[in-house]
Image (cartoon, rainbow, N blue to C red; front, side, top):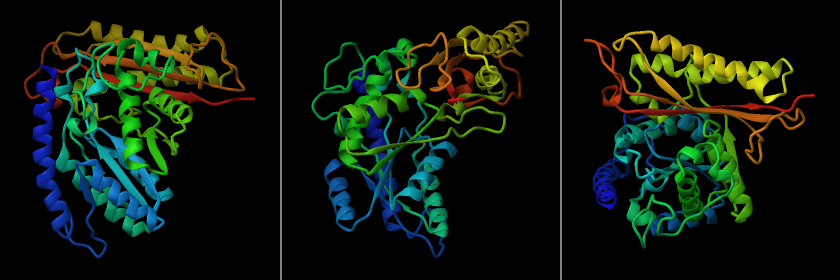
Length: 372
């Protein structure tokens, strides 16, 4: 059933991508004509991408890769801007990887916004041209048959197929709740790094465990690329930007900021000189507990309920939970909450994608830097 669902998604995305590919490659620009208009390539297969990559290599061009699952937002664009500042050409991958979704997670609900994504990249490319920086060169949008050529993607454990596992880093934090997630991330990133062979790859700090796992993977497997981490892009109220935020209507969006507020409270304790786990995390739990009680006291048409999965204080290299922070090394504060579906809605209420009926998992983190 899962394989059939993935195949249906691939057929839909393939048809959309191919029609858009023609528009991108044949029209003078994506939106309107400017002196800096150009086209970028869209690759669906590995062989033509590698051929083009080799041509760039022979010309002395450097490539920065930005791996994404689409549904692009300002955070993704900040990664592409950083890649353009440090490389002459930028490749963006758009692929919703099935193997990082568990068997009980709704792969179908992940947003797919191909036309909007390619328009955003086209507009960004024109902006980069004005700044005299590197340019958006290509989008790699493969199907699952391309990415998993011998067996269908498998999200079971132990699973059948070729996987990359980074343990114990992949087993903690997100790995406890989503046991196949980091295996899927490491596997698909290994494939992308091998296909594109970029000089540098770019990830956002928001997915902090992912950044630690990817850096360890590159080191352990001697992958010839440099991992660059870009600070988290946030909304004005502090909410970390995410493709999943579109599922948050006005009510859940307002409460979703509780995670960043909790982590900021814990960070304040560290800045004030607290080093013990309980002393640092107590303020974070106070924020989440208070918000939870406030929501529980409201009626079903007024409240937005959430569940805290974890709030972590971990070693920045091993992700082991800390009882005491070594101030010379610092630590990683991170957390995850699940915004539950609304129990009841009001007439005229501004709802998110899926009418606020989809649970939304939010993650966030703050790096506690070394202090004297």
